[in-house]
Length: 242
Image 1: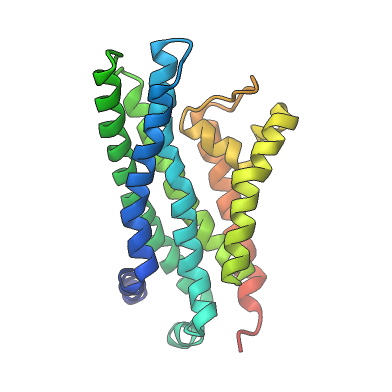
Image 2 (image 1 turned 90 degrees about the horizontal axis):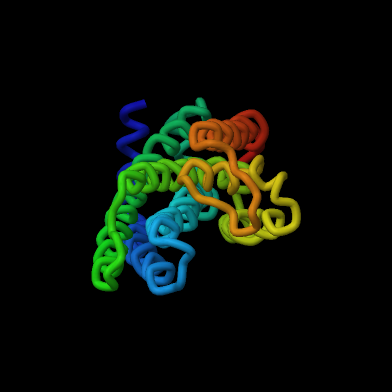
């Protein structure tokens, strides 16, 4: 496994798109953190939670990074060489999960740091409390959730294999589809992947619905990822790749 992981690390570092996404994501989260800091809130605690929850916005980019890491192989035809080097295809997927999980963790941690710095600076400049005992838990949950989205991206990429289609479907489902269900049926949303990830980050629903506790959301989200990876392992990766 070590040679495979080293090879995947080299591929990730060589991808210009991945490097751009890694650089842009923290800036994106920092900019998003400014919006709730400037908007009215019911209390300082609510305003603070809304600001630091913006660290979860990194999930879009980490998921895309995971998808590109898997689908890029099929798009450019290099998956053939990867499977020739390691005929046990499951090992290739495991190596990608390890590498892009690490990339997702780095991106998520940088995004959480950028959100903390930007949010705290703006809150302080406006005379609002900038930190509380809940902030580390919120940021930790955001980092874990965004990291898991990178793993989910690898699983989705292995299942769908078409790069543009996988990204479009993932964004449609996790940015709009689940949000629509949150508005339509709040009690069902808590059991969906986005609801589980939000629970892990300590977020709350504007519609008034209740989410799972953080530990429950984390376990449920991990279950969704495991299901996607197993489906890819036993269905998609058995197909002909020529």
